[in-house]
Image 1 (tube, one colour):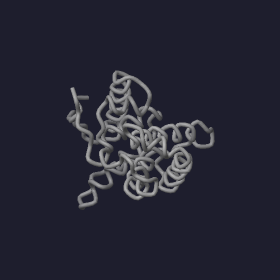
Image 2 (cartoon, helix red, strand yellow):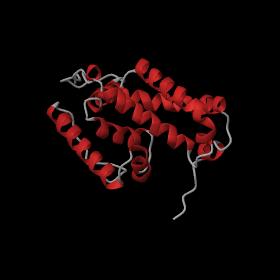
Image 3 (cartoon, one colour):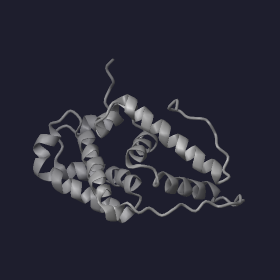
Image 4 (cartoon, helix red, strand yellow):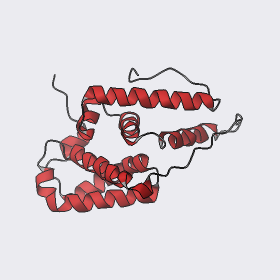
Length: 182
């Protein structure tokens, strides 16, 4: 089965490093922010990855999917950063006990949910970010993380089960609906 490449991937062939950073840099920062949970650390992580990619750009830009390659570098850099003992401490999320009647409820719930996602093991968190934020399929996630699609689905299932358990314990209403069949 042949799948057409997304428009931005097709446009990346033969692009200069500077053009790549201008067009795809913000997306890498967003992905990094979701992976590490801190906007400043995310920017540092992307800068580190781009600094490592720059000397190899001639080879990277000729790859079938240079963006996939850079995402993989970003996930690897995040994993290396996370392995340092000083970076493993994650604050417990504070979830409100009462319903909020104002319009900020959805944003507050979303923020609380991302704080819960931040407490997941690194692989589970990466799978959820790549699946639900980057909207990637299991095969692409598997390529980025260097594992099989079955492993991706297992990580997603365990992560979602953990989140459902924590959300239910916090008194939120849990919906069993998903566009990814999990």
